[in-house]
Length: 107
Image (tube, rainbow, N blue to C red; front, side):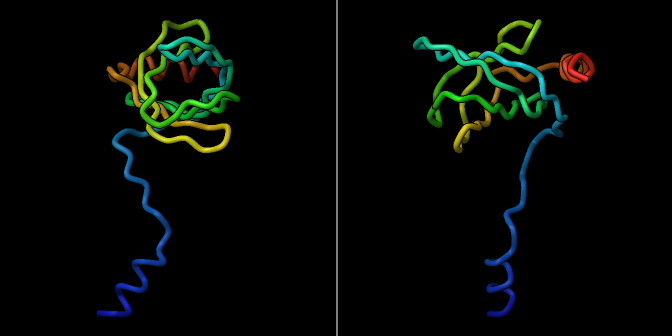
């Protein structure tokens, strides 16, 4: 039993995403609700959120608007942040057809 506990403790972190993600790589504008605007790149996208590479700092919990090039703004919240990257959970999930359209448009 002790060996199993040691093995589990050393195992790599398991991803627990609710939605599948697609690689995108298109431009995005991030705007905080309090003001300020950054331009970056959306790295991947799902109906529930996205990962963005942008120079600004948005702390976990920050309410932001994400504008994907040529599309409307989507409201969301920063759920993780590391140097130059952040994960955003959308307030209202996107329709799968919207995700497919954005992915095709960025190819």
